[in-house]
Length: 203
Image 1 (cartoon, rainbow, N blue to C red):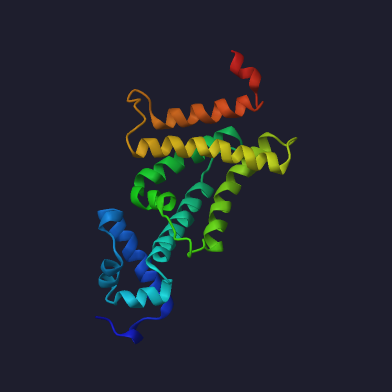
Image 2 (image 1 turned 45 degrees about the vertical axis):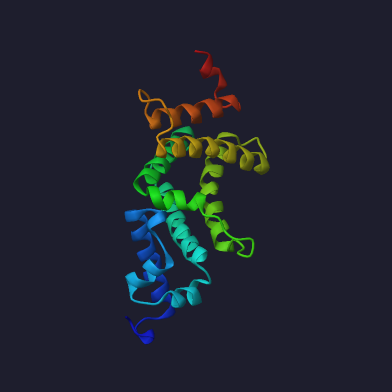
């Protein structure tokens, strides 16, 4: 068992997040517990409670790390602006989800108690993710208001997320179609439906 002075508060926090991520990846959320995480890094559960505040907040820290990694992947997409970039980001989103299945699902399935408010940093990372899409939508529809860009980005990405989650659960029931093709079809159809190059859909 590690002694209290062997690691700083921040070091223990980082170790716990990494240990929880590793256990989650290997065993899923059912194989994860505060005691297992503490044992993995050589500390007692009460140490982690003192640092994170609760087991849920430890899981939320894993979720935030996942959001940071996802944002990095999407921000690094190298594609021309516009529809092509949105499709590329949608594809990268689905690839990340399949590569980091357990951590990705935790982001959307973790339920906090009423007494556990969502930290501001978590909301900020979610906003950063959506801002990547809002920017591309604004380039395609410069005549629309920022509020409209916000609404469109949520609807557009809601479909991308839905298709991705169905794929993760093997519930697309479309073995002859690739997820990438479905994502591309969704993006193109929605943007054309909103008026972008609508004339092309007539041919």
